[in-house]
Picture 1 (cartoon, rainbow, N blue to C red):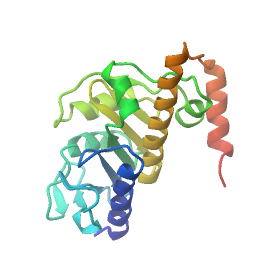
Picture 2: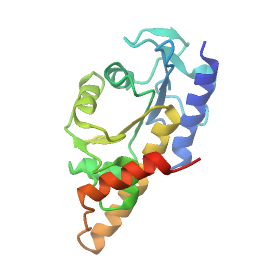
Picture 3: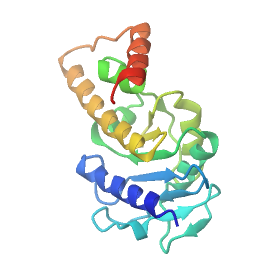
Length: 213
């Protein structure tokens, strides 16, 4: 079932440690099949190195396992809340990447002080409230606070990113950590200079319309 999606989600999960976004077994990538609405997600507690497409678990939007011998990620409920609320989202990532999670630890958004932030995120990367892990609270906080941004921090927790595809969500996770590191380093030198909101909007629109092939 959904062999191509399982292979893609497996491969993208393996990219997280390669990009330095996760350690041990923490973090996950999921993808939704737009036609069936079924979701492929990393199994709980399985190392990224050992992960194979057959390990990927298929669940429906209520969390019932449709295919797979392993337990799905403990973050499955979070992913499914977002998928149910956001039909435009077909990929989602969760990490505890160091620099972005440092902002989450102090409950601060990542300000729009870089053109890369304007291009990719369209404004500051928001920080949502603290939520208990394992239930639907985190997903509800993401839906409420993420807005049009493809990334959000949750206080004391970590990073969640979304996209129209699983690969787009992974790109947002990589970019989120990259800009978080740069902003953190800039803060050691002084006060980062905000980009005016109208220029952020112009840059984001241009990036969406003209970047790439």
